Image (cartoon, rainbow, N blue to C red):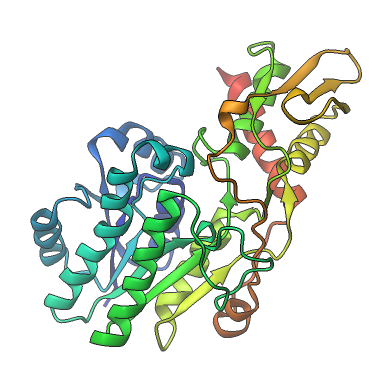
Length: 340
C-alpha cells in the first residue's frame, strides 16, 4: 500500500522538489500552502510537472484547529514541516510573527502527532543559522548560538522536535540543512538575486546589482540533493538530527565570480568595505555596488557543515558541486530572462 505524506510549505523550493521526489517513490502527496503563496507555489509545482498529481490544502501553521482537522483527514504516514518565515533579515522586522510560524508552528504539529497516537513520522526543517558564529565546520554536536529571531525560533523548534522524540517516542527528526539552492530559489535569497541580476544586466534590463556583505562564507549545495536527505531521515530506524552540507565554504564574492565566469565575463574588484565595486573589465562598467542597508544587524560570518554522519548513517551523497550549481542557476536565469 503506498505511503501518504503531508508537506507543509509545499509552495517553496524544497517543498516542490520534495513533492516530486515522493511522487516518484509512489507516495500520495498532500501539501499545505498559504493563500499569499499560491501563485508562486503553482509556478514552481507546474515547472516540475507535479501539480496535477498533488492534493493541495490552504492552511497556516498558526491555526491549530485547522491543522488538526487536516492531519486527521489526510492521516499521513509522514509529515515534512517545511513551512516557515524563511528570511533571516525579515525576522528582525517581524520577530513575533517569525516566532509564531517558525517555533510555535512546529510545536503545534508535534502536539497533534502526539495526541493522534504518535504513529506518523515527523521531519522538522532546521537550519545552519542556529549555529551562529560557532567555529566551523559545524556538526550535530556543535553548540547552537542563534544570532537572529529566525535562528532563535528555529532553535526552539529543533529542541522541541528532539524532546518529543525522547519524551513521547515519536519518530521525529530534525534536518540541520546548510544553504541549498536551485533555479527555484526565491529571488529574495542572495544566490538567486545574483543569478537573476546578472542575467538582467547582460540583457540591458538592469544597470547594476546591489549586494551586502561579500565576505560572508556559506556552504552551498543543490536543493534536490537535500530533499533526498530529508526523505532518508524519515526512513532511518531511529529519529535524530542530521547535518546536510557539502563541507565546503564559499564567500558571496566567490559566488559572484563563479557566476561571472559562467557568463564569460571578467570582473575586477575596486575599493573596500561599503565602497567596494565590481567592474566589467571588457566595458569598464560598474556592475556591482554595496548597499549597507543589506547588512544584517548581527552578521553570521562562516557557516560550513560537516555531513559525515548523514553520509555514514543515511548513505546520503551529493550530485552537484559548487561550480555546477552556480552555472545551472545562471543558465536558467539567462534562459528565463531571454524568453520574456
